[in-house]
Length: 275
Ligand code: 2AM
Ligand code: CA
Image 1 (cartoon, rainbow, N blue to C red):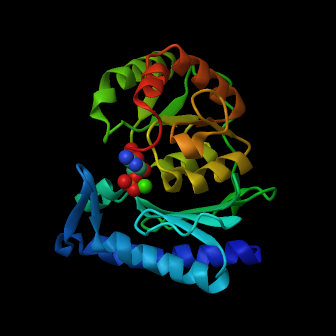
Image 2: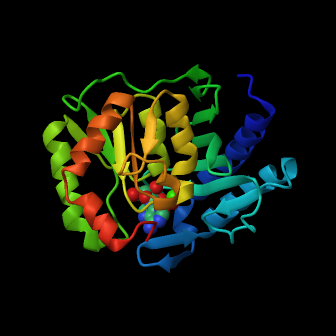
Image 3: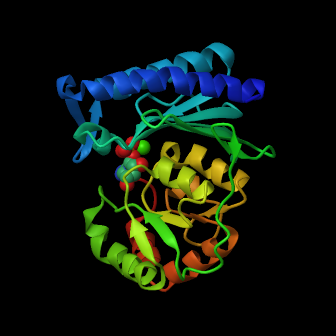
């Protein structure tokens, strides 16, 4: 696969750090777990994998800003910014479920430019660069072409750190569940988006995410021909952490279905953003 110079750097970072993540995964019982908040674990694996990713990115692009899950943010004034999650799906990782990914996005101002989501256990590398399409390993990927929710397989995530949103969330679940074939909750937002880009899911919704959970996955969805938005259909998904994604038809149907549920209003009342 002939990657651009930019993607070459991002892919190198993902592969080197991915190998490290798998080593940690194989001896996860020895990891010390600290908690950033309730149900918000961080291990030495998260910090070491992030350090490895940032080493490669900084070496090639020393002036770019950095927004990464386990590091203090840079000034935020840089035009170009890396948006990095070293292990997305930390709870899976810690429980020995082999479903997690490294997520590396690049934004210029508000616009996503490139993304890499790497599942090091399955060695599946999802990549995209603005205007150049989306790929899984060296194969071009596209979102599904399903026109309606009828028969659709939809991914979601629970508001695990905002359990007071359980009831309104379940109202959105019930609405989508009634209209679709089935729903999956796999525990890694970046992989949910990458799978949506590859047509493995027809769509995805979740609330309360952080920019590093979704930046890379969203540009992969967009370059695979899909749409990503917030719950109002606008482009404030990185800032709000509330996201709806899918092929263009499914995206529209999902938005309408979610609008008919209690979730958007409850999010409006409890404020947006991760937590
Ligand atoms: P993590 O594994 O890196 O914590 C699961 O629903 C998905 O949501 C995962 O991608 C998880 O990322 C992310 N996630 C859950 N709660 C979050 C929060 N409060 N802030 C940011 N990301 C969150
Ligand atoms: Ca994450």
